[in-house]
Amino acid sequence: MEENIQRRVRLRPADLARPHGLSTQAVRNYEEAGILPAAERTESGYRTYTPLHAHALATFLALLPGHGHRTATAIMRAVNRGAADEALLLIDESHAQLLEDRRTLRAVESALRDLGPEAGESGPSGSPAATFIGPLADQLGLRPATLRKWEAAGLVRPRRDPLTGYRVYDEADVRDARLVHQLRRGGYLLEQIAPLLDQVRAAGGLAPLEAALTDWHSRLGARGRALLTGAAELDAYLREREEPEAQPQERSKPDLAR
Image 1 (cartoon, rainbow, N blue to C red):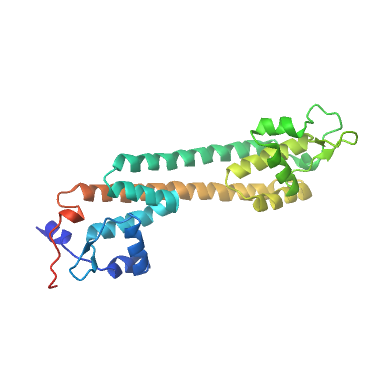
Image 2 (image 1 turned 30 degrees about the vertical axis):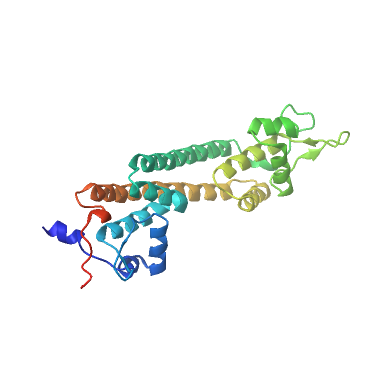
């Protein structure tokens, strides 16, 4: 009996917005985007929400930190139209991306282990480690234009062959290019990578990158926890939707006299 009364509770947009510090317009926008189930309307055209709508809003906000706005929106849209399997696939993809980011972080750490005080030194002319832009781009799975862009940003500094004018990447340049590649995969912007490499070259040490990796570890850990929090909230929302009379359209019409 109490459960049925709870489901017949009618809420205003402000009732949904206030606990989360949102505007009533944001609530309406979320409904129009499919993040919330469609609201019932009074004869005067006013929206009336229910505790299920409030739970949908709380679920979306719990999904945001781990999945981002676009994916969290897609998850809620899928759930609200009854496509739970599609929502679960989107969640799987977010977890897979987190796993790939963790693997990228491990790869960066592995690359850093090969860096030493000689990080800024170039290999000798004619060294077997020296290569040209085409072969290096192939090794990294990049276009030569990307390496030229990194050079323009000061991230890699190949010398020029005095006879041909071709770019020659010595051992240190190759290592820098690999490191930039890994950090880019980790989500770092060029302007964030440049000062790290500059400090490494100037100081001959890895402290700046070690600080960045510590931050990267923290961000990945926070994302993992956020995914768990969002999953718990979504599971509860799915259970509520599956209960009898849980769907807004199946509920009794609002009492317009209230």
